[in-house]
Image 1 (cartoon, rainbow, N blue to C red):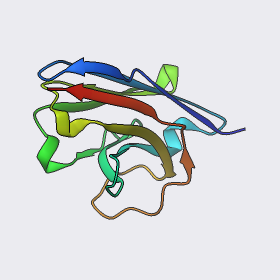
Image 2 (cartoon, one colour; image 1 turned 180 degrees about the vertical axis):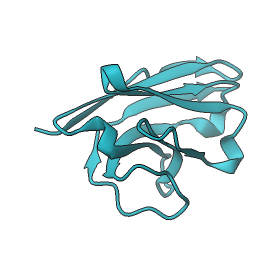
Image 3 (cartoon, rainbow, N blue to C red; image 1 turned 90 degrees about the vertical axis):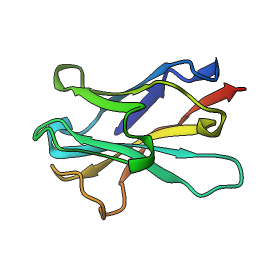
Amino acid sequence: DVQLQASGGGLVQAGGSLRLSCVASGFTFDDYAIGWFRQAPGKERERVSCISSSTGSTLSADSLKGRFTISSDSAKNSVYLQMNSLKPEDTAIYYCAAVRGRWCVSTMPPFEYWGQGTQVTVSS
């Protein structure tokens, strides 16, 4: 079975940091790009960042560059999202998802597999 297990969320004060982890199983990790998405209450889901471990291709939302960094570890079938200088507006449920392909580009096919999400709450 395909599984994407996201973890690492929590409650943090503004200016703090969190590191989210996503562990994948049930598919060939290097054949897929992994993305982090977030959805805040009352807002549409947005893609935060994407990485392909096989090519090193990454793409992050312009508004988050400099604060959020995505990385991967193929040996552990894992993708990480380091979030620094967190703001209250970063509060959301963060999901990791996978789509077949080895490149992260602006327009991508629908992500096929989704994890359960991890809550990030940033207090002011």
